[in-house]
Image (cartoon, rainbow, N blue to C red; front, side, top):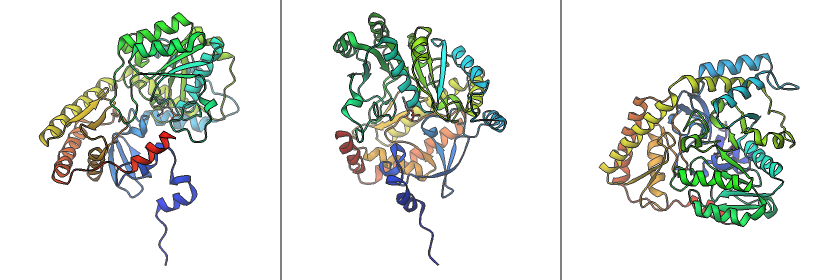
Length: 421
Ligand code: PMP
């Protein structure tokens, strides 16, 4: 009898590249599973039944734990009553009320499916509001995978990226220079709430840079857009830039707002309401009611629980513990960004060899880490989970120290080549 083909081989036959986007494990450390079968709390099970304590949280959506009962009960009840219908359910108004009550700069809300829908809408609204074309963005910042912003250029045209000028995040002078270049055509400044680009250290926003972005938009009649898709509600119970006292005109949201149920949002100030009302945007699933019910319950938990303080405390415990473990084994770690959104890389590891060996070793010990993308702390994690992670890190780094020094990761060369196109 012939054996069934492994899933990866079947995938390679019917899915381009076996998987597309950054979730293709081709670029990840040895042993990373491509397919997952189950998730609960802070734990993931792969298709072979192996379990992992998951520090990626679905790349952000898992804030209160996979399969959170209250959130999922709200989802299921609404789904059974009517989900994707000929028009929205009343829950859409309720969610818009809840989001605008939660986020201080927001007077209105629009809902969509992906973060990219929200950032694209923000760009359109800024252009509509100003009647201008140029948007100013930080070099290397991720705002989604539409032709205007996808990180690799394959399949896009130079025209898709026309009318964009880049600046260096946290560098007020380079922002001013970009705005100067935009001249009288500035429609918007885009800002990530923190610098959370891949492969490089994260940076918290310098309040002076954030304030300057606000002033420049006001001086030029342009809109300030904060892309809170990834960090939203993980830094503050408000827009993340509330933490530096700067209010944007528009903010884009997704990922954690419904704890993993598919919905994203664009929030805006009154000033941009007319523009928002006069662009044409829609989608077959944008008004599905069940994710909206899940988002309302998630927002209630954001207001009523200490999830933010807990995830920060857990992140601090992980950060301090990892520093101690790394020092014990003679490694230097670069742990950057807010501790609840940790990015962990090694000093003197330009080729990422040590980072990849570390993640592979952790994986074998049941901990899922990422070597070059910021990770996420879930409120479903416990101090015991952090301590288990620290033990796994201790054992892994002992092995890495004892083995030959890992060389540069060859598979990352493919990415560098594609990025250089
Ligand atoms: N903006 C940021 C900051 C993101 O992190 C992401 C997703 N990683 C997006 C936009 C795009 O979101 P989506 O993948 O849901 O389209």
